[in-house]
Amino acid sequence: MAERDHWKIGELVTLTGITVRTLHHYDHIGLLVPTLHSDAGHRLYSTTDVARLQQIISLKQLGFRLEESKKVLDDPNFRPAEAIKLQLERVGEQIRIQEDLRRRLEGLLETIRTQQNTTGEQLIQLIEVMTMMEKYLTPEQMAKIKDQGALIGEETIKEKIEHEWPSLIAKVRAEMDKGTSPESPAVQALGKRWKELVEMFTGGDQGISTSLERFYGDNPDKAAEYGIDKDVWLYIRQAMAHI
Image (tube, rainbow, N blue to C red; front, side, top):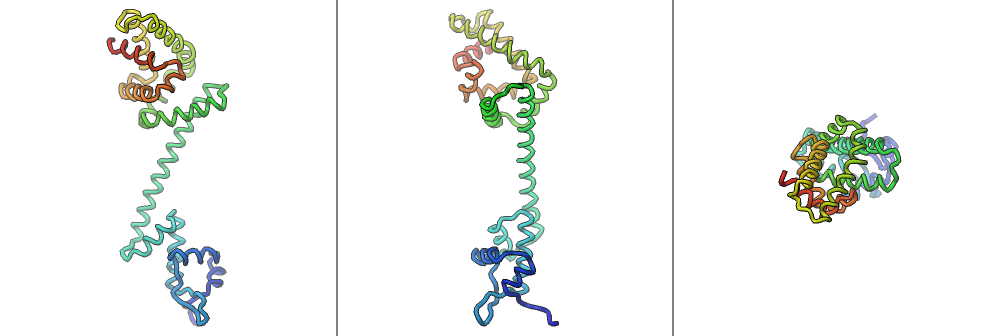
């Protein structure tokens, strides 16, 4: 039997499993245009066309989009190694994105575990704050905060957040409302404790503290959710500036 040098579209569909619709689409976008035609004008695929189809399938399996496949296959200087290198870079970026997602989910899970009665609304707010915080903190800083939290322990964190922080904020607000100078001994003492609590959660990392200050400075509404409105924030910052 003589070796075949062309195939009808139906024969190619049967042999490869590629659908007629897909082959028509490839033809329409110029990705795989049959180079031969029968006397009746029907499309015929040559051995060269079949080889190109095999390359298209290989590139698709590597994750290339159709327009990218067309670009590399139409390039006379196309080198398979370059295509694989490009895809490796893409896979690396996808891994980075997935690692970022995993880290965020771990942080969310840890927060939920420490807040047993978390509501749906609170979760939405938490996700929003986490997303915003990541614009200000590097992955390394986020990891350090997490490690510091593990070092402090859940009970201590809960006690400081649920009891001492609200009490400290209330005392600062009371002094501010009385018109007490931020440089007074009473407010200086509050500022000192405020700074100690911040350092407890940041591990004394000044870079993290600066990033958090910038976050709350740019998003005063988020600070307000914890009872720290803009006036209180500016007042206690003035006090800490003199410590």
